Length: 474
Image (cartoon, rainbow, N blue to C red; front, side, top):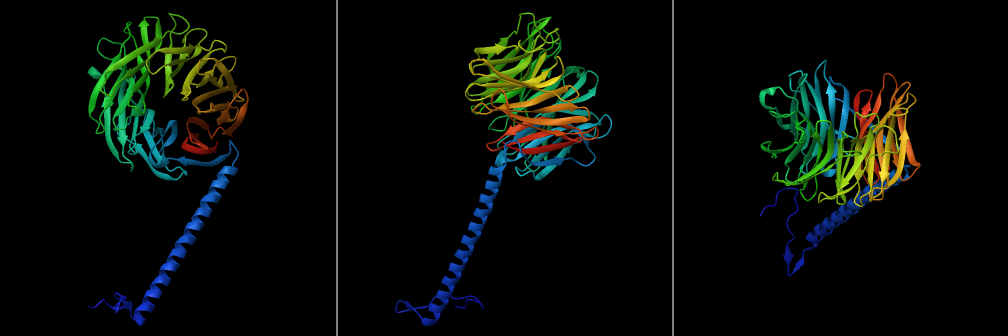
């Protein structure tokens, strides 16, 4: 049987032993295999060395060191703002915000970024309607699909609840607009979450006939089919609003909301739903007094409970930064209106698995300042940190707390020559580290959101109007 020119044939066996010529071929073949194995070993050793050196370099970086900075911008867009972050499969990061594309024409802008900072893709969701889109939140499912939500401002008093799903490669899979009856009312979408099956949950406010506005929770299927709507309507029948939604690993759906129970007051509310839309419980906290106007602004969930940040006694002469914690069963654990510090808004909150809580936002007296606080699992006030720029203004937009209780915060400071981003790590009354990127009148920098990993932080914000991401050593 012919084996073809240049190709060694099978070894011929005589008396159970190879012939001499075939033995040479076998030895040559073995030699090639040995050289191949040696080459593979050398390559593996080289890669191991590279990875070891990279790990050593990362390990040598001091806490707070900026490892890299990247900016992402679709062509023709400017002044990206209100950035949010989410992490998905393979450690990739999704960053989303609102970008201006001419006067009265802003669109959602979404980017998928490798953990190295390299861009996979950047997408602008241009509706072609020349209407402003205001992005509120982004979530990523385990399949690598991103979901963004917010609203389209058509004209004064007329908004559309606008949610879109984007596939792993940057292709828009579906867009959904939710409009109240008569198309004459105000709606806002504030938060989005996904479950393990890829279902989408959106929280916000919807004005229904005869209602000034109800806190709303909407569920879409992975294909974008509207499955159900659920509402929380206070007895005052005035404006109620859901601030955020979280779906935990067990599929429990939690919502934070502001709900009015009298014409002059509202309460901070938390609720739990099943994936089928059945409300399991709803619990309220009425702040410093039964008549105060209290508003939820942020939601976080861990195995230790549900934390909601907000504003107590809003619109009163002395507004308070509210932090409330419930158990997963809906029982109130504790609530603090932060009476020891002047006028405060809590705009972000985090809770770790032990129940320790971090809250952050703005202080308005005597100057406008960024602030963040830490509480023990029983609600005892632990520490407070504040910071302001040279122009006496600042704010904290996002906060995280680790299992060990270390607090990381990101925000902005107004300097006399522009805006600066700041990032801080703190495990007590003093900063462990604090860094800031100073901008200028033409190069504004703001910090909007952050993700905490085992060795680093990823910080989303704006640099000179461009959507940015920084990696900072932890």
